Image (cartoon, rainbow, N blue to C red; front, side, top):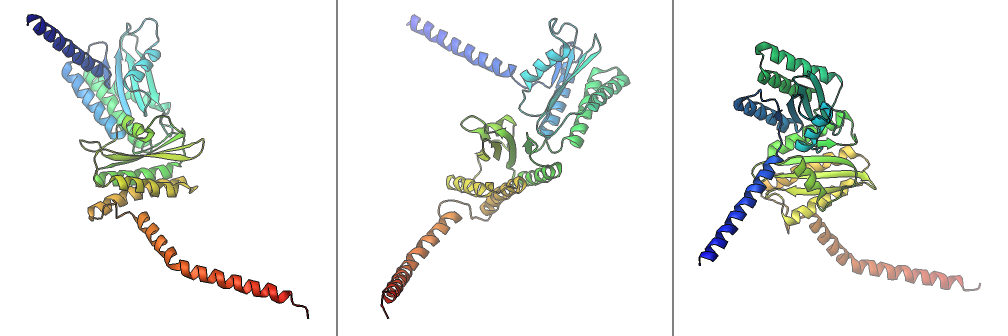
Length: 347
């Protein structure tokens, strides 16, 4: 009995270690927006800066971080190479972002950025960020204030320069003009906010791999409203031939199983158009229509799918016209036979 109890205890303890290990692993892979290798920030300051950076990043969907380094961060790597490794570790290249690094001892700077969609990086931004950091530090000799000033500068820069990249339209190949991207983004934002359902569009060069590319795109860019991260994603690709993937995410009652099939049919019907801007705008209108119908108590579902009703009408129309068509064919053939017979009579 003691042996069984001991074996059971060991099993439970091992399971707890595994859970704890997994938890630690997941924590290690969390996004870290503020990295202090020097130890000059208090815990309270670190939380304050991390929250501010997180809010800016979520608002613009562009990651913004800061790395305080000392000369011992990596003897065999330059500051820019080490910072690049941190960027990939904590942000990845899933969307646009900035990670500003500052080596306190050697007063060296490095800025790592990821370009997603339209050009989001200008050389002048380096000086803008540096000046904001220095001015923030000069007031109280506070690294907290300096980094906070940098974050505010990044926030302002993104808001003014990256409005077409940071929203719900991510164009990796510059398929649309700046004006079109801005108009589409505004439409997607309005529909998303009104229905509390993220309506997003992504554009890539080649057809992506995976079982659910649109869903992967949606999750990687952290879209979604509410507890269930409700939203709809359209992922468009140019090569090898134009096509798109659709994904309805979360728990939205406006999209039934039958409705999702109808959504795909309607979106694909616009795909043949050579005007990409109109195609994306039509997609947004279709999603909006689904919610309009749902709120009116006319949710798209079995028995209320327009293309099904059209097929029924066509079927019965053909059945009704069939006798008339047969009679017409018989009459035409009869007249043709008489014409041939009359032509064979010699006068």
